[in-house]
Image 1 (cartoon, rainbow, N blue to C red):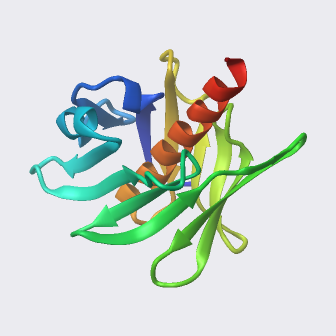
Image 2: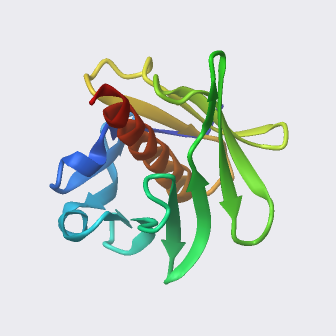
Length: 168
C-alpha cells in the first residue's frame, strides 16, 4: 500500500504492561499505556513524545458489543461487533463526524481490510511478521495511523471476547 506498516501484539488488553507498536524497521512509534488498562477496560495510545493520540473504552452498557475511540475527550469512532457469516465477516465503525468505515475479511484470523466505500484505508495481516501473537497493520498514505491502529485493537478485543464466550 505504500503507507506505514506497524507490528501490533494480539490480545493487547490481556497484557497489562506498556507495549510499543513498532514499524517495519523495529522503531518504537506508538506506546500502548498499560497502566490505564488495569483500571478499567481502557487503553491509551501515545506517540513518542507521550501525547495521547487515541483512547479506547469498552462501552460498559453494550456488553462486549462495541467500543469507543476518543481523542481529546471526544468520541471520534465507535467500533461494533461484526456480523459473522460463514464466509464473510463485516464490522462497522461509526465515525462521529457522520459516515462509517467497515472492516471486511476474516477478523478472527487477522486477515482483513478497513475500508471507506471502496477505498482501502488499512490492511491487517498476520503474515508479514514472523513473530508469534503479532499482526501487521498497513495504513494507506494520508490516513490517520493512530485511528487505524485503535480500530484494529478494538476488533481484536471484541472478537477475542466472542471466542472466549463460545469456548466456555
